[in-house]
Image (cartoon, rainbow, N blue to C red; front, side, top):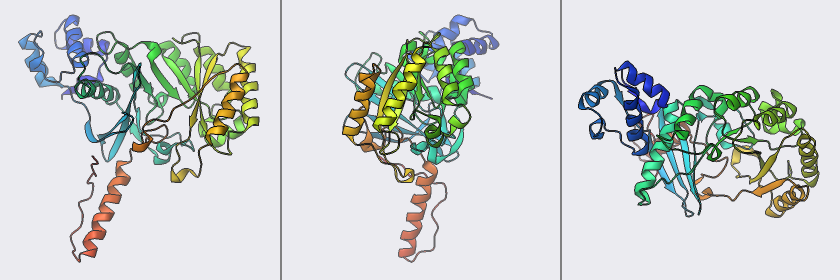
Length: 384
């Protein structure tokens, strides 16, 4: 049985090499070839002994995910749809800025959290991604972008686990992927520049603090339990009190001295002055016990199944002003890639539904033409 070496962080790759009778430094060489140079062909790894290259050819491979579609936004944002088998797909988004290049990575195919304002949550949950499938998104994007942008140096400077899925519900795959992102022999990303976003899986927040502390972003979206229960169902399991307590404890290990709270602005739902003042009171009470935070207000990206609307810009700005006047660091997220459905909350990646639509259209066309042949089931519609 052969294995995909993208599944291994450096420690696990060293164990694998040891099982092949090879020294640890061979694992470091191999790791650099794969991640720093983007090499998938063992025969091209010139400083590895030929005997090792031949050995690897029989027991291992390096393979990214198959690209179903690629879309490039007018603002330079790029969205990829990757096939992960069985009719499932995930989405990955690259967001260019003047001083950084951020990759938004998925951790699950679908999502079980069912947050009301998230299109991915409405898709439902299919499965966890493997470590290799998480890191493959970075591996592919980094080396594609170097060619696409004609650059030899690193393009991706920041990674955010804010794509499809709840990262902390896929903890066993998340940690090796994070370690690979941070490893100097791979991508060498700073802990401050790798962010895990969570809807509030309290036990795993505390575990992440011990195992691999990186920057933490928490999907808050409400100033009280009653409203948050409706918007983020996980709140019924882990209350705001438990969540904010875990965030305070996380700061003792975090590479940043604050937690980012994400707040999706929903018209007439959570965006009133009274909500803002309630949020201020909540955070001021928590500041007394050491919680430092930053708010990121996110304009909602509407989709039909949600039944929700985006707060008007003036309302978002008024909400932000109340937080700022109270001394809370607050930014309004600039929407990026919404012309290609790559903006926050739009990562649906529902290949199964797209396939069903394609089959239905094909059958209707055949009926209109008076033919009796059936469309092939399971065909994936590829968009360019």
